[in-house]
Image (tube, rainbow, N blue to C red):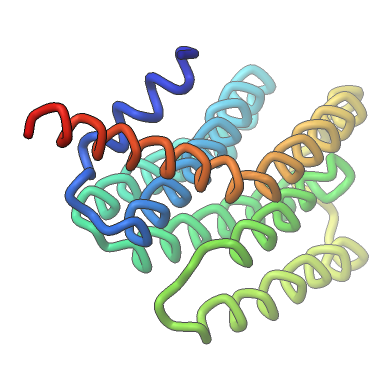
Length: 203
């Protein structure tokens, strides 16, 4: 068993009393929040090194949002956790584009967020529809806004490197997110079988 499997099963073990559907919701939103947390950490470091303190702080706030999302997951508030994760990430990305512009392609993370929104099983079916309309409008709005607004910070040569980094990271995470449902389903099925096997041994 790989270290990833051991880690994943240890997380599921804490929620073994949940039904399979709720267990899947928990594992899915937790995994997505982990991806977003990694993005916030990387950007906070990049902007901290670049001296763009306000965006470094924005991404630190985003990390706090991820932490709060995990707290909501522990309380089994999946819809609130998914919404909080989506709205805080979208807000931080919008501020990112406002202060440094869209030439670093950070707007691609809004597309990643759109994919995440489509796979989160919200109880209210109108939530993904509303977010599915709002996020593309937000993406279009950032490009339109760019024509009338000069970014506050010029990152110079870092901008081109950051653009390549964002394209690669956003593309990689998008591929992973599109396949994550199958991955989680497989792990949960194996986890349930392990639980049943343990119960049979105890009987």
